[in-house]
Amino acid sequence: MTAILSEETRMRDEIVEVGRSLFDRLFTFGSTGNISVRLSSGETLMTPTNTSLGRLDPGRLSKFSADGVHIGGDKPTKEAFLHQCMYCQRPEAGAVVHLHSTHAVAVSILDGLDETDLLPPLTAYYVMRVGRLPLVPYFPPGDAALAEAVAAKARESHAVLLANHGPVVAGATLRDAQYASEELEETAKLFLLLRGERIRPLTGAQRDLLRER
Image (tube, rainbow, N blue to C red; front, side, top):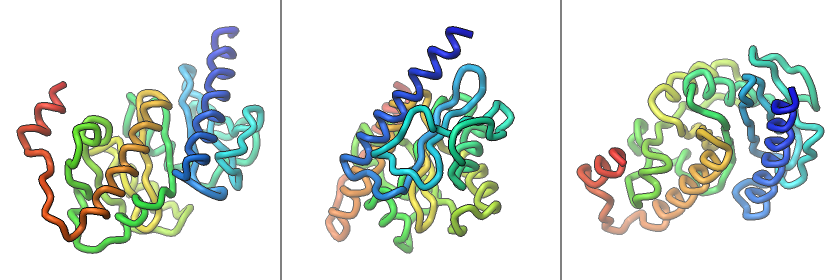
């Protein structure tokens, strides 16, 4: 019991730290975005509804049972199901980060991209931390149909981009999910900066070599 409480305390503090870092560096804004961590018990901690990631209180984080029932803390975000869908489809995931980061959202609005993999492999770190980015069709926030759509895409990739909304990224740890989310946003920024220019993305062989590592 002591070990579980110690893990939970550490994770509460880490969620607050990561949330503040993302907010302060403009990866999210206002009360947008949410973060969750799955504990070794199967329970989940999640940022509450209508709360800025820059001003989280570790003692007020929403807590869910291993079965996905809200059992403690403030009222959970209506986007809690996005996290639960990722955990169901990605058993290796220990954390999920969902942002409304500007450049990723901009990419999600563009027409004519490959919806099975929206961004080209511009850098090695994008390939290693994100890999593949499918588009989830648009549904209103909180729409139950969005859960099924996210679950379908999450089987293919640990990172998905919600159309006209933002990215949802799972990672083995919260830091993994954070860094992958940041790499996704920076690659989206590069992609938009380079639109109209001739680019030289990584080749298929170069991508395969990175994935083997």
